Length: 369
Image 1: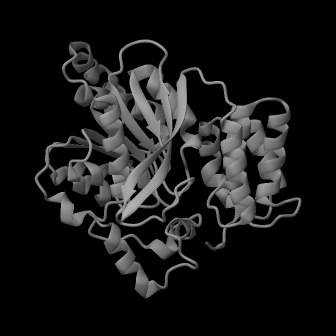
Image 2: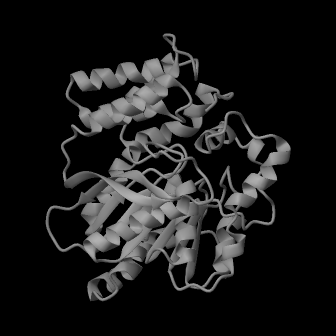
């Protein structure tokens, strides 16, 4: 683990809307921004101490969900310092005390990995009434983890009737493994366990690097349907300039991979090759895949998404006037993804098939030509 150059004000420029989307009040974000001037320090203007002060106040008020989200901001963007590791522990402790509007269970699944197993903590969300239509595994990327996806998990469970299983991808959160090319085997183990337990189709929705795993799981046939939102795939003609990615992303990815320092320039091509899906893209497959991204992604080239169109049973949406993962159009995008997923996870239900064009219509009006 290592720290890296990161300007906290530039981080707020990019991530303040994301923090608000998690559920952190905008006035708290503004106050934190005004007080923070050091990304890694532990003094009064340090990133962790300022966010921690707000989280502790929320705990004293009994606002446990707000506290958990604020601890998520405190541990952001990596666990490169002891203070951030402690913040993650405080986040999990606070989240255990949240009162949920849906049925909730925290479960640790032991899944095969290497010569043994590895624990994968999973947060399960299910609406209080109605038949279960399937299971949807939900994950973020290298800096947005399962607790930060609380809003998306709850609204998805309530709106779709899917059992939502939120988890941290390898290299993040509570995972004990680094980010590496075989991370899909851990996720496939979770999918297999959920399929065995519930005996229903299992889908996967991944954002950012989670989208990489969604695409790979679909290509390998480990999942019944998958949605890749902003996932890097290595399919573009021009490789990603990893060391010059904005907002400290190279450091964030390096920490997820368990490195002790940023990779040297001559090491980058080998690292990119480890995660390229080019060798799988031409493989015949039957698992439906929806690949989505903004037209102006600041991290990955458009070809990483549009290149998936050559794969059978793959739909590509490029959202105009939007950036990485299209957060500017998140609501219609998520609703459209719900419609697309339900039509593939529960196709035997006529109402679901009829709903797909209605639910996808708003986002289709936003797609680039």
